[in-house]
Every structure is written in structure tokens, then in C-alpha cells.
View: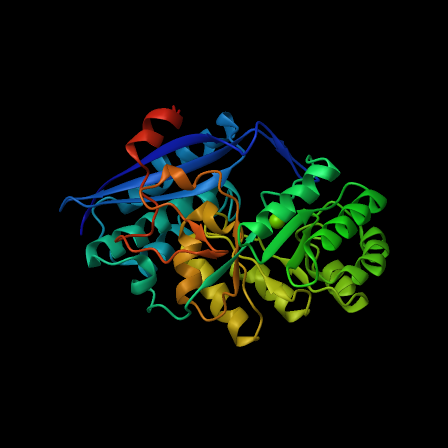
Length: 370
Ligand code: MG
């Protein structure tokens, strides 16, 4: 299992419709920026991070993979995942210039590719390698019906349609104006009834006072969680909000390290934990967060479930993982898409992490890596 080569790749995949928006971004494509690792005995592993498909910044990641991380990997045993994780985390070429952001995203792609290789070498789906199936079903919640760019009437119609398709959870975006978002929240809750979980996501747009004002009125609508209400790194603010409202606070998609999560745990600032293997330095680091969350008896809802493919495996195998997000933009790019059937993710069956791109995706969406 000696590593022969590490090569970057980029896919730009269109989102549902032509454009979507939350409170901070409006995008037309999702970037799948990844690493392909070949071993001398003929296996190939794939891992990737997620971006807003801005090619110049994607190139910073591919350059980091190719010129800073790859030289430390060629000739190594791909099965030594923990040792190689540590080697890249202490990469002398990068530690001084960045322990998060681009360096972490590049590390994520490589770490996931190594897990993909490990599962392929074992001839098993990744969830089996992670310790086996721990739950019968992984419940999906639908975010793709809830973008801020969707008009009110279409938002309600989309939520109703998702419930008719079998989803038992949905999430809508907030962070525009308190009045508009409360109106949309109330309309959706009324349309879907009391038995569907309804979460909201602010993407870090509002300040504490606005969040508190919003939450006082939103509590009447049985909100499952309020995700990223405040700026992503604001531990104290989230702790204050958590004490001020009965709505559970969720966060994690923009945290890069176990140390960052540890501070939120210590301050009792979050009730739902949302790490992302494409944002942190891969599955190796996310497993540490999941284990710590479990030790605090906090549930995990890995960010952007099917957008990593890996989170489906993780959620079937880890006791802390409760539900998983559904945003189906990129799933069909992979040989085993993360499919939802009757509101739950299907258990993967193919060997690997589910991260192998199809030839069609390769031909259709591939971008130059430099
Ligand atoms: Mg979010």
C-alpha cells in the first residue's frame, strides 16, 4: 500500500436551479476540489473538500495539495492514517503560514482519500471499517428547499413537497430580516404541521441582540435548532444566546480544529455539533470531535451530509450522529450516490468512502488544476 502519487482535481457542479443564496453567499456552482492518491499495488483513493467554485481560490488548494502535502506522502504506507495525519498537521512548509483554511481543506481531501483507500483495500464500505453499522436508519433533513433566495410561496410549496416525498425534517435559511424570516418560519411550520422537525440556519449573519429578538418570537414555532446564529468563532456570544433561548444552538461547519470545538463544549455554547470532513482536516479529525461530543452526550449532525458522501458512512457508524443534511447537488458525480429513500439515507454497499467520481462527472465538470 505504498503511495505512488498524489494528484489534485477540481469539479465545478451546478446547484439546484441556476442560483441559490443564504444570508452571506449567492452561488451557481459547487466546487469539488480533491486529491487522487494512487498506490503502487494499483488502488486509487479519492477525497475532496467543498468550495464556492471560485477557480483562483480553488487553485490555492490544489497547489497546496500538489506542492506542500504530496511530497510528504509519496513512498509512505497509505494505511498509516493517523501517523500521516500528524505528519501533514505538522508540515513544516505550512504550519507557520496557516493551520486552518486552505491548508486544512487540502489536508481534508488527502485524509479522506486515505480512508477511501483503506476501505477499498478491505473490500468494504467505509462504515464497516469504522466499526460497523450502529443504527438501522440515518434520518435525512432537507435543506435544498429552504434557501433565502426562494420566494415565500415556493418555500412553503417546497417544504410540503419534501414532506410528501418522505422527509421528516427540513431546514430553512434565515438572516435576511427578522420580520421576513419569522413570517417564512411561521408559514412553513403551519404548512408542514407539528410532526416534522424544522431547523433554521443563519450562516453567522446576525448579532446577539438580533438573534435574541428573533428567538423570542421563533420559540412559538418549535424550532429544532438554530444553526450558526452568530459569527462562527464567537464562543461567548453563542453561550449567551444558548442561555437566553430554549431553541437549541447548532454550530460547527466553519470550525477547523478539535481545539475550536473544545472551546464551544467548555462554554456550553452548543447543543448540536456539526463538524465537516471537508472543512476540518478530514475524517480523522472529525472522528475526534464526534467522540468528544459523545462524551458530553451532545448529538452530532455532520454538516452538509451528502455533500461529502463520507458523512453517510460516519452517521451509520458513530453513536453520536443523529440526523444528516440533504443537499443533492453533487451526489450524482459519484459511483455510489448518497441517496435518500423514504426520508432516510440508504446504507452504502460498495467498497470505499463513496468518493470515487464517475467518468461522466469527470468529463463534464472537470476544471484545470492550475
Ligand atoms: Mg449551515
